[in-house]
Image (cartoon, rainbow, N blue to C red; front, side, top):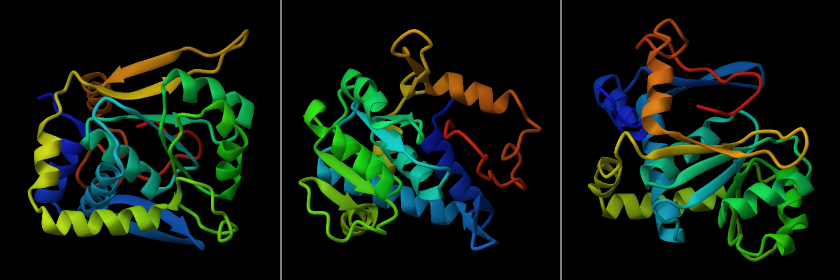
Length: 232
């Protein structure tokens, strides 16, 4: 049965809330995030993005390494009917201008100071960018650029909204259809700008279920991060 990633997230959280959903190695120790943890985080990020003005069918860029909170933000954008656009973290600033403008991106989530500096460097060439959120605050204490905020602050605002509106998140998730666009990927071009590839929720869902032995396909398998890439 075709569905969407946020709907699958709710299903797993309801059926196996304490089972591992994601694992991340931190300081040499694997940290486990349960399905209940993940759905709570996704709801709070989605609520924060909703309050900030992210709209259905709008594109949101995500730049960084494989981190649970970056994946959660992609799921949060999908929960609102928005379209996540993962960009290569090692791309130089100039290489980000085309995808940002081509997808008319206003909202960005980046991992750390390096990625923040990259976006600020090209902001004049991408004037539509209104909100830049960062996951890792190190080195960013004295930054005061308009629209720049931490993911923690976004989560806190979303947490309050979600608490006051307990049925809002599930209602938003239910609005999506399997044929909706799930994500946009910009491929690397050899002779110019790489083309954008939109992928529907049904296509990505079929790719996931077409490999039943793949990691994360079975309830006992937690989806751990890959070494490279951020495509789900």
